[in-house]
Amino acid sequence: MSERVINFNPGPATLPLPVLKTAQEELLNYHGEGMSILEMSHRSKTFDALVQEAEERIRRIMNFPDTYQVLFLQGGATAQFAAVPLNLSQEGKVGEYVNTGAWATKAIKEAQKLDKPYRVVASSEEDGFRSIPTDFKVGEDAAYLHITSNNTIYGTQWPEYPQTGDVPLVADMSSDLYCRRFNPEQFGLIYAGAQKNAGPSGVTIVIVRKDLLERSPANIPTILNYKLFAEKHSLYNTPNCFGIYMVNLVMKWIEDEGGIDVIEQRNRKKAELLYNVLDSSDFYRPHASKPFRSLMNVTWRLPSEELEKTFVAEAAAQGLVGLKGHRSVGGIRASIYNAMTVEGVERLTEFMKSFEQRYG
Image 1 (cartoon, rainbow, N blue to C red):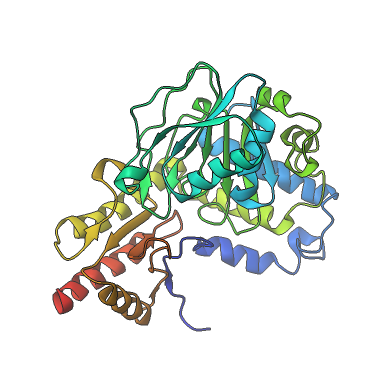
Image 2: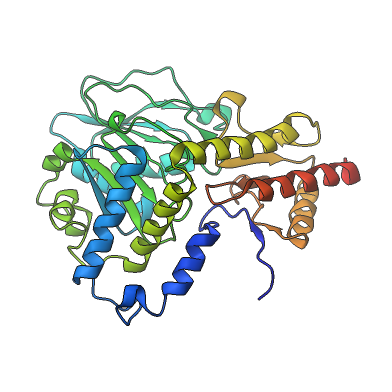
């Protein structure tokens, strides 16, 4: 087997090596069952126990109280853009949104398509999504406030989450779930496509306050109904069995590493290493404003697009892959999710310094 590369892809993203090795070892015979988890019935006692174990770990890592329900769904964050207004809208109330980039915009458009009352209460579009708007108030008639906690394309992240009082705070945490500690009880609902920080693509984690399940109307599509899937413990239909298995392994890895505080400390160190190089250079131009810089996705530009292409190509030749910026904005993007090692980031910063010396 050839040497593994250092993978800065934005998603699907790098996974912890111990997780991949465990999956490899268990692939043919899961826990003595004589078959793979890929072959096992989702109605079996063994798989049901796995789902419960994954749910418990997800709650335990961040100390979610038992007033929250964990769901394993499909369709990625894109399905949740529609599921949130379908489940949480209320008669005479308005779904509120903060627009901080491409994925927030997509969530807003889904509410519009569904003809659900909505309004955008704040946006950072005017400054090229370099910041997070903080000067806004939650409406008294708000059914919920929706935010995107981390913006993979632009490299911004909420430094602190907004206080919403009795209005449920809904967060798309697809790209920064469990990258740092937060107060779980500040949220009404969190959703995340697993493929960046929590597992492989194809499974979506939803953590919802149980009282909000009563808002789910019976006449919405079954596959998007939170209440129905909560009653069936995510097993109404065949789930992404292997995806849930992998999420459980990733959550176990977080615990084995020392928990969320150790993970956060490591993530802050990785981000600091990269931002220090960017801030000490006129050659590299970071996109995000300093107070709103992401711990997960570091974005920057070079003096020309030709140099950016050269940077990506030469980095790949040295085993540093996945650094090309999103097609809509260009530039360079290093995604440094939980599974990215400090050593991997150090390799990148060494390359960046060398590249600047040669081309700056």
